Length: 105
Image (cartoon, rainbow, N blue to C red; front, side):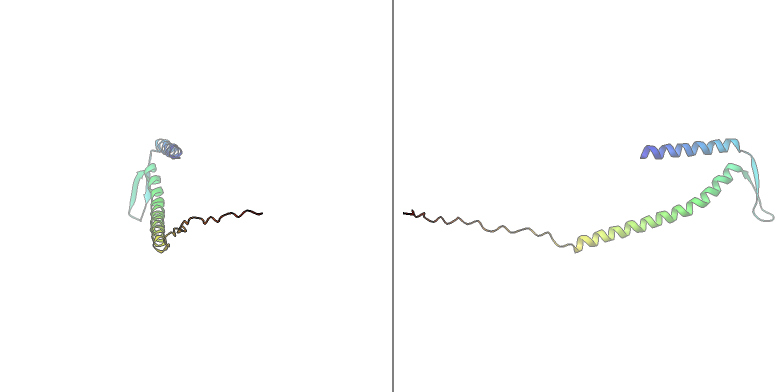
């Protein structure tokens, strides 16, 4: 599974590199009336991508952290409440009583 993840990341990075090389020209972004940001197009696209990705990634990590804490607490409580295993008590071994055999005559 690790190799598949690595291959996907390499493909994404190659696509980003090709996009950056083909679109490396300046763009003007008008933020307010008197504030204009001059930047390169790949920087603008990457910034917009990260502005959307990072909050959702942080929410995902928070939910995962909370779920891990909850699972750990439940497992700890289950161990504390579980009864001790019952070991069967073996019956004492007694010698069988041997009765004398009477002949049938």
